[in-house]
Length: 69
Image 1 (tube, one colour):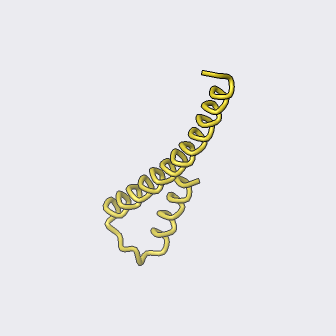
Image 2: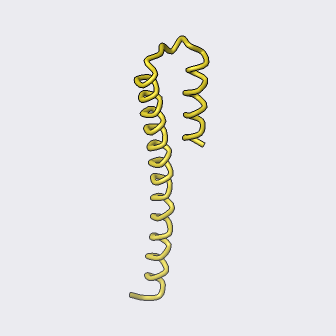
């Protein structure tokens, strides 16, 4: 390979890793959202309370905020 071809390949790899990082970030946020939904579902099942209880909803949302932040 010539010097120019090596530079082009290196640039392509840099672009590719930049594109891959976008998907990695998206994947981690999706995993956090899934985890948060499981935590809320677990708390609903554990406490056996309706979502009309404001204090219960508040606790659930605070847990969701902690997980997503």
